[in-house]
Image (cartoon, rainbow, N blue to C red):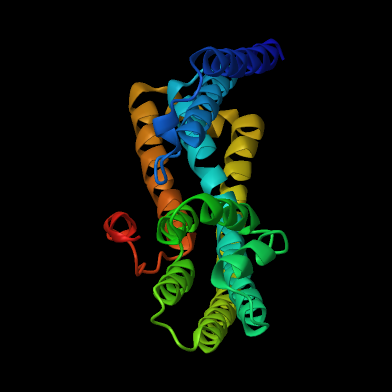
Length: 282
């Protein structure tokens, strides 16, 4: 019991120190760039360190701490993969809804800037902040630059299609923008429905994977508590090395599941050329 109390105190102390350091150091503005989730990395590192301390203190085995640390670092990614897929689907649906709003507003003889401003406050929740910023920029700077920044913020292939259509219309080269927006919305909804069907087919696989992970760790804990003589060989040096190898293999398998369960990134129309296009705009 004393080991368990010490592990809990050590975990709370480690998390407290991590929060204090984060508060003192702050967040670098450069860390906000897409693709570099520094805050999430720090949180995962703190959780892994706390798991290592708990596993070592409770069992007295450093290798057990490694096993718990690997699980603590990887399992949250497996659990959050479903949320990421749902957010991706919601974003696609939101962009389709906004395209339809723009179409209906423009059909009612509104200008492009006016249509963006009118739909800003009623845009789908997933993209509303980005649309509000786009409407604000459209009042003070070039519409092409504002559209480019909107595409960079949303970073979605459907958003790129909408932005390209609006940019062409802003230059006066699109004669039937409502029909183009309607086609983009229809295509986006069809893609979302297809991904939903794929998600339904994969749900059983994801559930089985989570159940397998839970059963494996529960069985390990039960063996350590109820059958200590069975686990005794792992207390040797070679046993510790075997546990480390098992942890590495299991962690690699879990990470593979995380990668496979993430939503697939579709190629973007404006990726890599958005900056040059914005600079070349009016």
